[in-house]
Image (tube, rainbow, N blue to C red):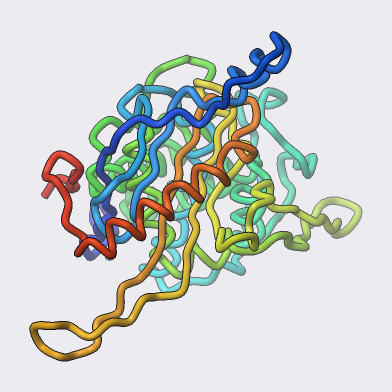
Length: 334
């Protein structure tokens, strides 16, 4: 039976640290080009190794801003954890609810109250297409089941958001407070509710979670919605157009936040297998990095050179024995 506070059963670590600021903008000769570079240069960023607590580059990584669409990552994780814990299926059907924000929500499929969609398809649309209504539908469905299981007279969406914040606390995301499953409430209120460091912690966690990674590694997905008059099919294309290129395999891109356009990107390379000098046994070093880019007019445009630079620093760090100054290590709270 699920407890009143949290239905998760084990501690999972996500890791993050801070490094030095490095500007990616090049000097350009024209005023027009200079304006474009300023718009593209992210206001906030951090890059780090996803499997340790070592970071390589940062700028404003503790600046607070509304998480916006990145809230949907936590929404998907809570839904996946609930399905796993209850032994149910992502094929179960969720009903699109009425929502007070109505027309203000991003709704690429034109969902209306009463439409029926599989939980799995709602997660696809939320993560790949930054679909606000799909995220609200997930929260309504899972939240209603949580409330019933706990025999509480509570608002289902509020109960669900509480789980999102339990997740943030579990991962050591000390500066994060989720306000809604889709994130637009926090954007409109202009409240600072997360940081780049915290989002890197979240990215490291979810990209080491196979059930989540399965969704964001796909470039597109066909989904269906049942409504009055019959089923309607849609093709959801991953907004992260970097997926499948140069090792990029997630997580969300072209997301709206309180600081503007943003991307959260994960990239991997083939593991490095070496013989341990102490034991003579083979040691496998996994290679995965994360980049958080926030407040740019072209977040996916500035991310590839950032990843390339980070991989170069990663190799230097790895070849140097992975020795790291203490100030570049930040661990989640115990």
